[in-house]
Image 1 (cartoon, one colour):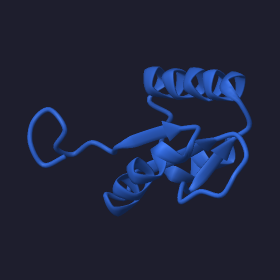
Image 2: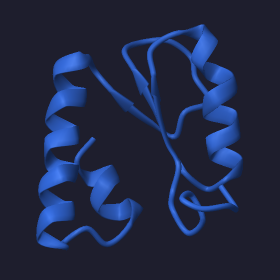
Image 3: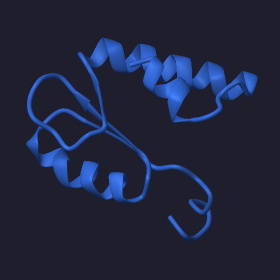
Amino acid sequence: MQEAPFAGREPVFVGDDLTDEAGFSVVNQLQGMSVKVGAGETQAHWRLADAAAVRTWLQHLAYDAQTERRDDHESFSRSL
């Protein structure tokens, strides 16, 4: 995350099972967005119910990026 093209960007990790927990941990350490899909214990900071919710969330992120309305995690967390 320190070298181009990643420098200055925020990592996002979305996963749905136990094998994704290591990714959540790394992204959390980098102050990024970790999102668990579905039920179960997790280290992720946010949760979405299912794949349909992930699609909807990604559509919102794309819209916000296009309109430059995205400010921080607060707008993200309100959409979860």
